[in-house]
Length: 265
Image (cartoon, rainbow, N blue to C red; front, side, top):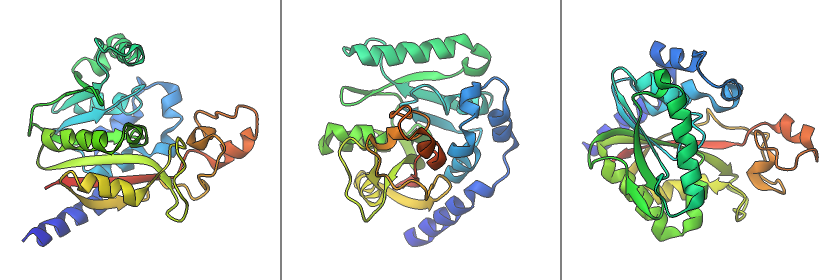
């Protein structure tokens, strides 16, 4: 029976990007989005990515480490009327000055546009200090975009705590959607490069009680060989090398990325 259920979930995941969701299209097309964020749509494929995860407007969704709010601008209006978005990031009361700054920046963004963000709930996700963003078993989906490579620097034990917190928050059968920078399988992972092996990420997350339901190549970029002298930050949008080989990095585009859908077992 479990194999049949997994097969059904796998099929659902594979078909997710093809489903029609006018509300999601409208959220992505909104004129309220930051123009610089809209410019990245061609590299980040928000409609296909969220569709692949199987998102629905009636869901309770947690976005872990929303950063500058690139995906928050899409998720907030999409979930506003029928669902719920929990933006889980740093605490404004954190002992870390940097964390407080991130929290304050997100607060300013949310407060500046109540029409878009007015119903967004805030939660604290500040590894390794605090995980207080959702009641156990209350969430349909957790998503995180280009963050796991940062968490791995905390060490294996702390990464396990992070994924355990996600597992605890999700309902049985809930979805954990992940996007991150991908190192080619035949190359070693370079410390602080921002890249990870896809197989290693799958192993870490499955060890926390998840099962990989599907993989997508929607965010793949075969031009990215992950061999840049300043890691993934050499590429757009950061362009860490500034004018050095700038045109080369622009031609490569944003990083090659794994896109993974997990199910809570």
